[in-house]
Image 1 (tube, one colour):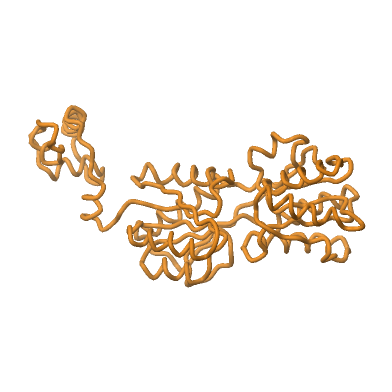
Image 2 (cartoon, rainbow, N blue to C red):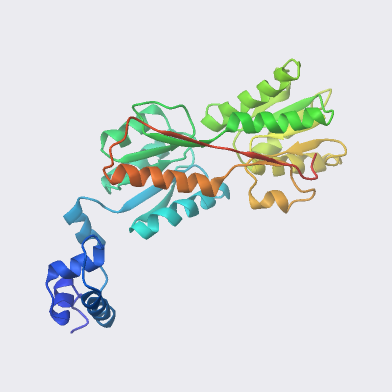
Length: 335
């Protein structure tokens, strides 16, 4: 066979002396084929170097077998772990997983979603912090399966997988209160994002449950980044009465908080305690090791994938679904 000729399913069928339909059944596994015939077909596939053409399969099935994970910050180690969970479940089912970054304005997200819908991806896992109702609507209106990361359940806008952000933040604040800290600052991420809003609610809840007033002066917000954490921490450390502890919206912000504290010649936790959120690998590598909340990224990715598979299989489902995964306080040396 010439190098210019792409081996097709008909070539495999001819070499194995079986029908094209039989080869298709061996590849899909959806119809029974005798073990002897199956072994012969697989041997020929290996000898000829046949590889299924995904675009041709898409034309036959009306599916692209492609799923996209849309994130705001690909440098945040939380998202690669989540992508690994997606891949673990979806790849054995023949899906290609792409990670797309919409970093910045909602217009960036408009562009990414438009591109994905033009490529006719089968499903989107939307973890972008800039997502708005119109983005959810564009995806579902195109007939594309949607799973959202966090937010409020809405029958119009796809399934949701989230961890208990409010409960997790309440737990870490309660931990500090139980240690005797009272002047606790919050260096939060974007309060307009679902994680920022829910983690702020957890901070407020814990203070109220301990009978304390919420001091709005001790709350600041910015990007969920190391730089955002440093900037917000500097603002709180500039107060006439600096906080005794800083609770941060995620671990990257907490590393930035440690940067700011050290720049002032202060120590963690001797002068100011610090907590993070997510439990990325860096949380156990910084000095002192970071007290944080374990946000189960891998499990979240797996749960998103299972919901997508249910939708794409055509299995009837009653309305939208919400999966809430538990979080766990991880106490280390920074408190």
